[in-house]
Length: 433
Image 1: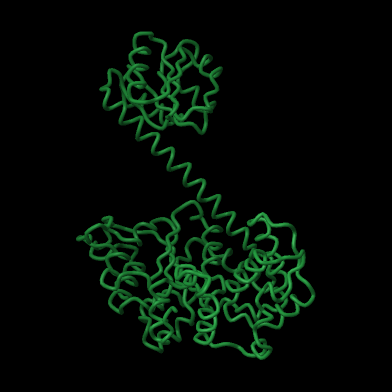
Image 2: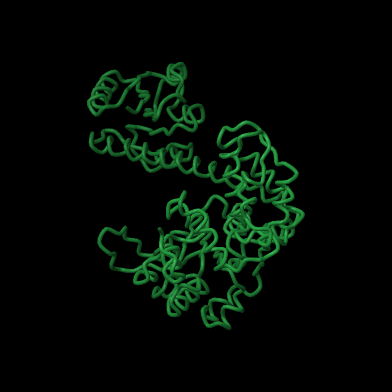
């Protein structure tokens, strides 16, 4: 039950409102002045309903005291000026007396919903910061220059391309670029193209006029959802050529398709792929008009095996993180484990490193992590010397883990969608046993 603080000096109105709110399942505490309201600890409520004209102080005086609790201002002096003034002081909404009871209840519910959404957004931002911090990408000397280059981009650099092997942390770097831009508090929208319904790619990305049954209608698609923020496009080569061209035109003109600039968009776009865009243009899988937008701001993300000096540092960082995450006792790597970590070629890059370290934390029986805890002792010595191809690694990883991981978990560890996992299984004649 939501707790409401009602501040009203007219006893008849106070009793009537209290009865109305309690009848609609609100827990109501009343006060006749701002001073009385302060004694009731206003920050302990879900919402405050305050009259503008009160003895000794105006209702708006409670706003900074109660922050961040939302405050609705009531007044019998209905005017645009008083409404603007109340909102300027920080009121979440405003209602003029005499008011309709249904209208008041609607405003209260809308204000509570808005406040819950704000709290959820703040919580999600904190979770995101925690997750990004857990990666602690700034530890990697090999990535420092790349991170610095991304952070140095101005907000006018609307197009960024990141390419590198699966599992190298390209999306994390995209988040770093977003978090260090003027758009940090704006939407961050990720579109995984291979996971989209092929028949609905253009509508999902760029919007449409006829939603499919059960779908939420988004006239501007995910591109419009990212307005004023950042749009991440994973694997753009999976888009049909005509959709790539429409996307390129929309991004270049800063307007939605077919709107002739009337419906403008302001989006920073980051594309993530495994190969450089020029190479994909040569292979005729990326439209040249789309690739040309990213020519000046394309960055290569190094594979973990090319960050030799950082591997142990990262492994220790992930070990500390997963010990805390799983409430484990402090653990450390044995010398043999660190030697095995350095010898292994890490075809799955940092995603595989994290997976094996987490596995070790869950399996370790001693305070030291041994190669068997990591699963490296079961890999033939020649594996350390051999650089897997992507297909070889896919087959190795799936066969090794499918007995203990679900399809969703396998896809997540491999950095692909469930659909892509199923398609690659069929292609490689590797059905789940």
